Structure formats: structure tokens, C-alpha cells
Length: 249
Image (cartoon, one colour):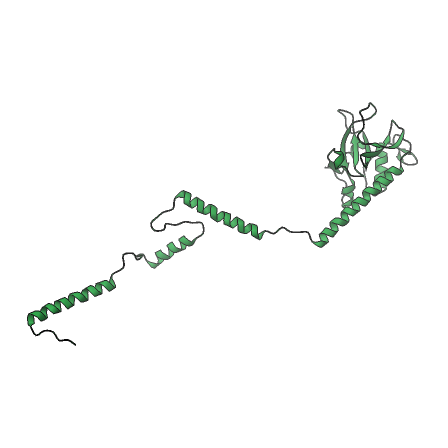
């Protein structure tokens, strides 16, 4: 260790310099840097939590977010949540059992429609009789329809107006019709007063007062005083084949 100079004056000056240097070093160690966060740990933790919260911009570096910036952040967060929900949503496909059941029901309806056509055509030539509802007694229009459908366990009311209110309404368009559909007719401004059975290929079977018997004719015919305008279509075969009763719609 180096000894202090022997001169009292010089020794005194050296002691003062050493003391000043020690004070400077201590001040350097203990001083808080200018850039350090002087807030309490609790306040710093609160700011950190707010900064990482999704969709909530916070003041960073002294900048306070504007209303537009906050709205944009919320919009981005909402879009992100929507995309995540879309990825989680998976379209459910019918099971093999459900597909088989659907195909079986469609096949059953097709067979029933074919049967309606066969039974209806089997009545062609039977005389028209007002109030008739059997091949023996003859048929009127609604009697023929009721008889054909009853032969296939489809229950219908008796009159044309009542029959025109059951089943499912179908667009009055030849392209929308299926064999077995009921086609209704009415004079202008009047209710349904005539009905027949569509048998496919643009044709129908009905009990005709003009012909005096059950006949098969084109559904769409030239206007005539003896032909009532075609008014509508009712589907009763599909309703029955699905295991439900014919209902008003």
C-alpha cells in the first residue's frame, strides 16, 4: 500500500480528493437512470396487462390512441373471432342411415305415383254419372279422384272444392307437376268445380261431362265453352308416402 506524502499540507489535499471521488462513485451507483420506470410495481403490472389485452390499444411511449384507432382495433379483434368461429363450424353431412332412409322414401313415393296412374287409367271408359263414386255406379270428377286415391290408402274428402284444399300447393306449371298430382279447374270468378288426376307427359285422367265418361286428355287445351280454365295443383301422394295425413296448406 502506498503511504501518504510526509508533507502535512499535501497529505491533507490528497485526503480531500479521495473523499470527493468516493462520494461521486457512491452517487453513480445509487442514482436511478433517467429512462427507468419510477412507478410502483403494481402500477407497472396494470399497464402491462392493459397493453396485451386483445383489441384494446393503450398509450405506448406517451401516445394515447385516438377513437378511430380504438375502433379499428376492436374491428380487427371481432373479425379474428369470426374467422375462428367459422373454422370451428363444420357442415354436418347426412349419415349413411339417413341417406338410405331418404332414398327409400323417394322410391316409395315413386311407386305410389306409378300406382295412382295405373288405377286412374284403368277407369277410362267408365260412364260419367253425377254423384257416382265406383266403377259399377259410374263416376263424377271428384268421385273418380276419391276412388283412385282410396284404392292406394290415401283418404280424401268427397267434393272437388274440398279436395282442392288438401295436400300441398304446387306451382301451376307443367314442369313442376308429378304423376298423381290433382289438377283443379274453375270458371272465372268461381270456386273449384272440377278436378282430375295428372298422369305425366302433360296429360290427365278425369271424368268428363262433355265426353260422358272417364277419359285421358292433354292438361293444357285450347279455350272452349265446355272446358273450364286450369286453376291449380295439389300434391297429396307425397304427403301420404311420408307417413303424414293430407293437411291444408
